[in-house]
Length: 349
Image (tube, rainbow, N blue to C red; front, side, top):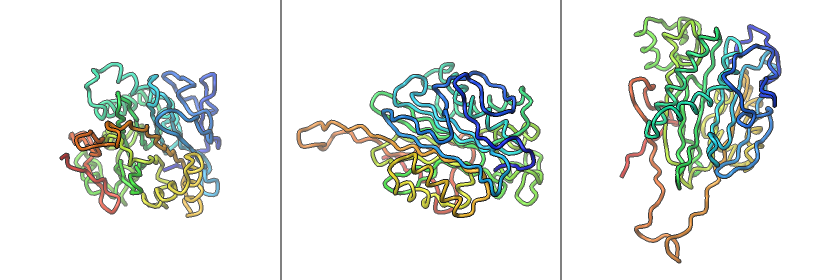
């Protein structure tokens, strides 16, 4: 969601080598490492062990006067080869919140990973990172807001785990054996559980908008409505397996005009992740999206496994797990999504 009520400039935000941004807005930054942030809107980062990444965005100038999306692409996250952090932030009522998040949320999460014990659940740390992001923006008098979808690919010995977190209606969709699996939850006023939470917290809904204003029920920023529009994310956790081909992170401008499976089918037709990200954005424009558009495609590169026996895997050899674990503490959004794109939660054997 983008608001067109303030002309804050048309150029997308990117981090320059000296740590400044090309945005005229003075957005406070905790710290900036040029290695950790995308250096241009359409630059595909070099291939690294574990994944290849593509990103593309479009202001949609026929419908939007400003570009309020931001993103983060962090390779070798925290200095670990093959580890990565990726996120899309979709701003509203200005771009300050989205820009701040694009430059800082991954740094906040990294500091929490250093601060807490290694056994602390990553979904809990994602929750705390989003809460701290809200506090930082409130202290910096940032009154704009943004939706967010972020993922961490964590490398531990011979396994990789994918963690996702989102607030609002930006989505993460995994392709497993050609099937779209949604790893996020749309926090919108049309959702009965979220609408009930808003009312219970003292707010009201008008035309599926919080207090008649916001169409999303969770976001980062939006300081004046934080008691209602909380920043606690919906989170998922799963171990990556060889059947997992790629992950799509995109703002609602993409998902308003493409179903999860349609997006997956498009990316499957284009092995290069940069071209795939461009294809998603161009198709959304063709489908008459009226919003800003941003898409990240993370194509997983799986290591070749050495067979335990000359003839290949035998009975008793370990196979990677394929379960999807969804944390369900009270602070996390109610799991599940109605419709054909529901996240399947598989029981462990």
